[in-house]
Image (cartoon, rainbow, N blue to C red; front, side, top):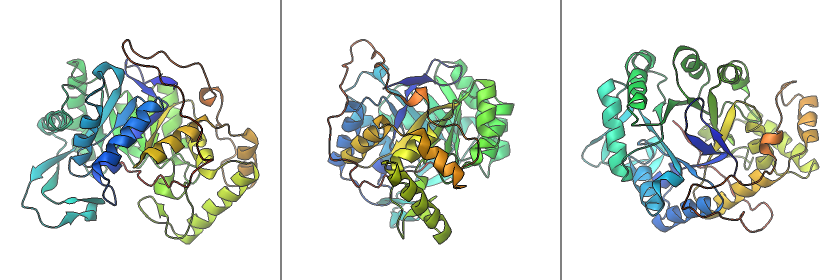
Length: 364
């Protein structure tokens, strides 16, 4: 699978990254064996980039991901996690479903973007992952902590990068405005932008993506299905972590209808669109099963005709001049794997576009 370098760092990611929120029992429990099988399927599909966070299942995602990758050589994959929420033990009282995770509420999240908090967060993550380093650290959702993030959290990450503790640094959010400020006012390598460059929301096109392109920084896109609506538009489907409002659902159904006329599943059109901008280094896809991983790999490999996006623009469903998938998304010779790693063939053909929902998308 094609790789991209994050900004001016030496850290590479594959065009698809495995988002491990579901490994933290996002919305519903995931069997431990199924969690491991999902990671194995990602590896078999050529995915070598994996993303997690302490927030996901109160550390469960980090523990499961670290275990699932433990047999792989550390220099054969890229791992990103996030900082800004510390996990403090507390008496277990019920579950954590109020935050979206089906796990016992035996820890509480404590916002902390101080320098000490960032270092402690990374140390705690390393312990849960069973690793001695991570490749990328993002400040996680500093929306309500802007001053602390810029005054203390970011400088702490910059020092850790200079010390070689991490390879690349950035911020991950569900908005584009503050991420644009990170690009302008700091020396981040990349930003993770969730849900703001999709077939339903192109707000990142206004400033974020042009700013990243002009400054030679990278954008990793998450939430390309807007929490599931663009994977399977239907009543009750999630849009940005909540039930989709009727007008948004109707728009998604219209997108699906036009994509079908071109013989393309809507989720393939959504994935390729989000990968189409030159500043986008890759897409983070949340998967809770091996079947969803294999489906994502097929979506990425499937051609999407430019005529589809032309029709969406003509129908007023996309901006007039958005970038469309080009050479970066066309099949290319495989990138050599690091020494000592196997080169896996593409996933074998399977049922055409199985009805997976890809609702395991989260960055907040």
